Amino acid sequence: MTVEERPAEKELLFTTFSVDTRDYNKGLSEEAKSKITWSAKAEKRARIKLDIVVMSVLFIAFFALQLDRSNVSNALTGTIEEDLNMNSDQIVEGNQLQVAAICVAEIPSNVLLQMVGPSKWISLQCVLWSLVAIFQSFITDKPSYFATRWLLGMFEAGFIPGAMYYMSTFYLKHEMATRVAIFYFGNNLAGAFGNLIAAGILEMDQSWASWRYLFMIEGCITMFGALVLIIFLPTNVNDVRPIHRLFNFFSKEEAEILKQRKVVEETDNKETIFMSKKELIEALIDYRLWSHLILNFFQLIAKGGFGVFTPKLMKTFGFSTVKANMLTAVGYFGACVLSLLLSFISDRTSMRGIFCIGANAYTLIFTGVLCGLKKSGNTDKWLLFAMITLVNSGNSLSQGFNNAWLSVNARSSTKRSVGLALCVTGSNLGGILGQAMFKSKDAPNYIPGFRTITGLAGGAVIWSILVTADYWYANVRLDRKRAQESQMVVGNAEATEEEVGVEKSDETWHYQL
Image: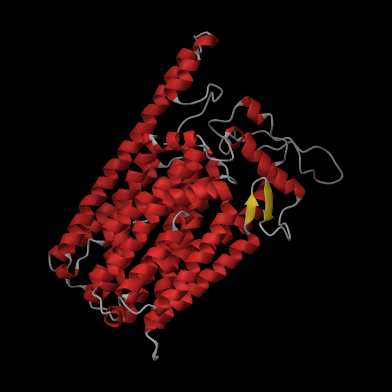
């Protein structure tokens, strides 16, 4: 980025610099460029501090959330079925009930988030679900298990889209995919370390059931995450102090840069703070938001199934309880590496669709190979381990790309908030279906489950191609309309806005592909 430094005794925070077309690309008008009055170095310093404060805190919260969501898969390798007098299908039904509660409360939660404020609502959510996570250690039967899973889902609902919406109020479009990847890194890392933690706890020799210790310990970790949110999370981009107002991590100059760079991007300065009924209805009838929901639905079926059953599948391959949980962690570590690497490339290229297509094709290939091995009766446990690890390394990648894709293409804060809620709802619906793939009657090979997941992974590839094509065609129409607009009189130009859905002043704006 080219910088023009004004001569001064000390470095000035507010210094004119020309816009790098890689960083501030496609959609930034000349009028907006003229508003940039701070140095690249000053902005970088503010952004790094923002990453340290915001991303690390949200990372910890997502890490804790995933521990509480996924520990049932580890408990299945212990004695939870015998202790609660339930079978594995009933345990999975309880987990599906949790996901169903998330789907029911996802959009209402994000409406409340708009009313209360993201930082306050997210912090409250984390406190509530951590309490439920701790108290589920004391369940004794099927009704109490179902009740705690439902409550866990109700209080977790909206956290993921709410956190991503919160990030989008601070970060620029070209910065979002990498930050979403960092956010989901907490998810993948929890999958890895959660399995390692479970391997140690489930092997403990104690009078209280090991799965109860597992729920208790991981619930306490979540409570710690809730306290971190309350202490450190900035209120919003206009007031970067935490909600308690006791201290501030940002200087006045840094706070102003963070605020003004969002204004310069020509998004937030056109958006209302609160969600109106009209805006909510407009968002709910926008077919593109629903197309992203469907994409996440297809994409997350494999993750939903393997996320719950990988430790149990590892045991059917011939590994012990401890090894099954430890080896499950390997795939999640692979997902951590791939998600950060590919999301960085996605941000640098401002491309989302091709990465969704590639990630879904990856899942299709390796689930297909794994299905073929199981159908052929292959019993080489290390080969089966390698294939399921490759599947788990890639079956969650496309979710982050899709969520970032919607976030950068949404044209209002309401559509962004509702759209992200729909995306996560699609993920949860896919997770519900995925968890139903491995029935106890199909044990130990689970051929029908492997076959169905492979077929639906193919559906994810096809749908991601269709969504990409839709955005490409929308850009073609935009270019045609702008060409016509240049020959129209001003009085006829309003038709462009109504027909295309983009304001006339957005002379270079395009949907990201």
